[in-house]
Length: 115
Image 1: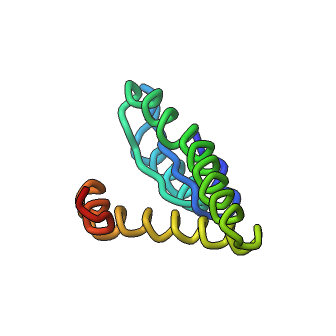
Image 2: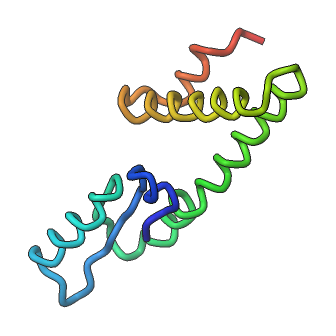
């Protein structure tokens, strides 16, 4: 199930093999879905949790970007600038989690001041 960021080549998709799918079919699925972003094979029993995280997840991120930008606008930023900064912040933070393999809690602690 691809998610909406697949539209810009940054999707997160998984697939599960059916009982009649072999390596050839898996390779085709991997090639097809990799063309629009990340693609992983998972067991069938994990499709629902993946749908919750990757399928629905973008909506939560969009809400967070909107909220961050609204805060910036309230403090005087122009809306386009606020959206750009909020979106880049999410992109950068996501890239840090993905590429550094540092636990998100540690990354948060690296940014936040004590208390």
